[in-house]
Length: 494
Image 1: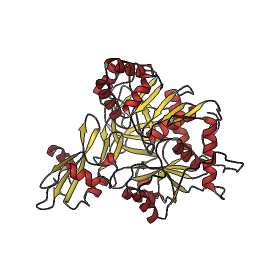
Image 2 (image 1 turned 120 degrees about the horizontal axis):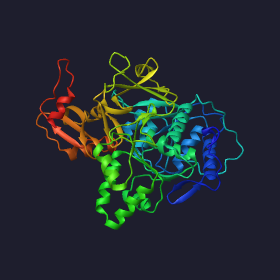
Image 3 (image 1 turned 180 degrees about the vertical axis):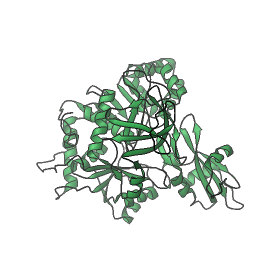
Image 4 (image 1 turned 30 degrees about the vertical axis):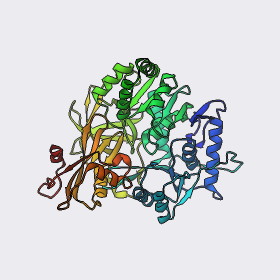
């Protein structure tokens, strides 16, 4: 797409931009809807002046027009999970200073209560597709455009502020590296409150003039039928989805399984990310479909930094080399560059794709940089020019099903349970989820607790992907001399 990404879509009147619930929207209609949404948000103002507007909508045309309407009007979009609980939402509203929440009519009572408590107005997507002649603000690339909440080493998620320039850099970098074109078609079922779905799938596709099939949730059966029919040229998913697809193949009759596998084989690109792709899964997918997965590495704070090549060797167990325009280096614990081959170091990143700040948290922002490098907290080695991730430098991050979860946040919620006296949350290796959330608890005297009872209690307090999938009851948590729980010892208990 030529010109400034944020000024709107090219008016490709006859090219389909979105397929939403069976209805096709061309680029011309989508551009008009985005502009109309922006004008509705502005009201009698000339510029939203970085007003934070929450976006609580499923994947669909309303989400796309809401996101771009906020951007076009000069606001900061804050995409949130449709499954957010009231307690989680309260943290997001207060941290980001959200003033309005763009959402649908079926919003939960807990969301309504959290918004009422914070005096946040609930607003519906604009249904006015005729934007009129109202002018939109002229916006520089240094303006803040989006806040995405992510989990770090602290107990609560931080708001990652991404400027317009960074979004533009992230999109153009991937378009170049993965050779996006207007002929591409991709399904969008990944969460649209995470960088993977927003940038890698939705934004890259729309900027390229490609076609996106919006899916509010992953329906494996429906997806496979569309793949068999040759609907898609590009496919992006987390390792958990590839595991589920392979399981689904085994449940199909041989003829249908063959058509689905052939559909994947015809695609030009299959990408795996958001969690490490096990080498065994990499090989199984290639054996089933003929597709060699392209694995890459990124974070909310930086977009994508490393990628296996589109043209060239895609090495199992590795995340490739730096993307165009992104500087990546390894540093040791003394903040010195790691130069020896095969020596581990922390991944640090520089470039236009890097985030601007943690909203309202200058201390955390300062702590995440050293000499201009963003410190990822991930440890890697370089082998023949390819980076291989070894793990987190912090043991309080759990990567489960493509999500990066804070163990400390989950622990804070579980400690509110009346039967739990102490708790530590860890990630346990799992073939499907990468890691599953496990809770090790010390109960109140005489109490007993079962996993399903705990999961039911968590249902309205944690998003589904944060709820523990394993429970171990112990008499005491192992601690060091400073009284800190020694989490590596917990894995021996489980």
